[in-house]
Length: 266
Picture 1 (cartoon, helix red, strand yellow):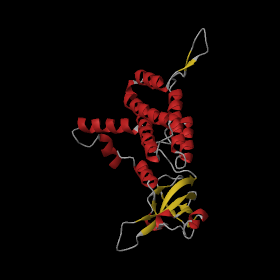
Picture 2 (cartoon, helix red, strand yellow):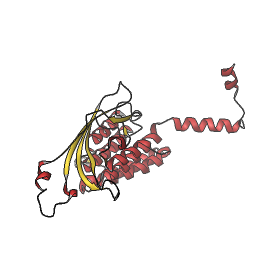
Picture 3 (cartoon, one colour):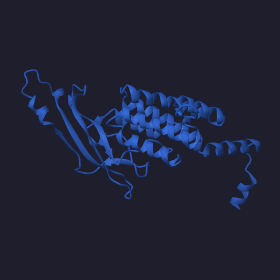
Picture 4 (cartoon, rainbow, N blue to C red):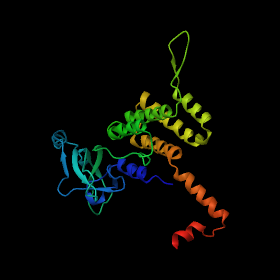
């Protein structure tokens, strides 16, 4: 099933036009299901002083214009917290030669409170969730660091399942076991979670690049987040087993209503 949350976050990561009515779906961090919209008169977008100082340059072009923006976002659910977004702005060509040729393009760098990252947040262990929450806070400003926190969530998940971190040694200090090896042990010990283990290994590789190379984009990190979310769903979401059981029961009855259905309707 498509991960709608990740789909929305991907759209946000690509930036969006200044026109408030054209902003993408921004998920509410309080209820997750609600879509945040800009609060009336809260949007501010200003060109920076440095950008203004370049207007007199002999080869100046409108696409040199840069600024920063801020806005308050609200959810239709009145009990949800307001969210503040700040970010960078720039002018770019629209490609519309018969209308407005230039537009402000906005790139968010921080949401407070942070936007939700995973749909399975309520299902996963506390420490795993805490590390995902940290990643959510820094994703828009520092994707590589966020990838490292997502990787550490996998380490926490291995801890949760009793997969040891260190090899004991009689002669020296215990040696640390690589995350590759821990995931492999997890897959062997819990073969029912083999698919989840494969997802976690991919998360680990993305996290490694974030830790050692620092070249990740937000889209790269979101791919890892989607893998982690899917793995957590496979491990902890019992709805998968329930729907399989109910489908098997319907097949066994060849589609006829069960006796419990008749009892409930009588």
